[in-house]
Image (cartoon, rainbow, N blue to C red; front, side):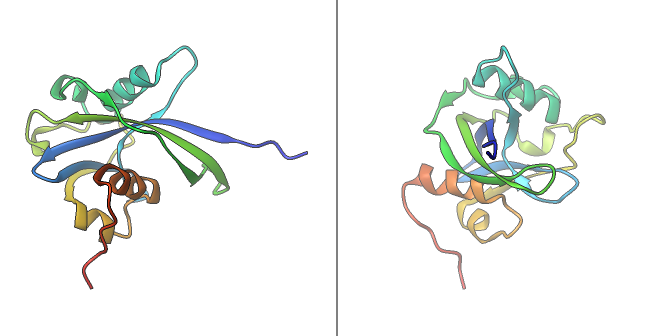
Length: 147
């Protein structure tokens, strides 16, 4: 019997301007939301805030109080490249400072940060598919990329 693996992540849908959202990228160059795995003994909110501060120095101190958004389910590739079921627990927050002022700590897996508008997110091939799914769910309509 094959074991079914599910990746449960706490992710932040962080707005940082009028219709702009904050994204980070690691070594792969793939853009994604801040966040990561929920560890044993953590609530999803605690996991999101911990991951936020690991990825961007003191990020949690520069956010409004996160509120829960509907979760998103789909498939993601695990570290071996195998597709696994994924459930993202989403937290909405607003960035209180310009994203350009945020510092990526040297120990972080994050290598870059940016703000994208919704059309840029949909058109950008390096934005994670699950992140696009969250954006489309959040805005409540399908936006097609410009030709």
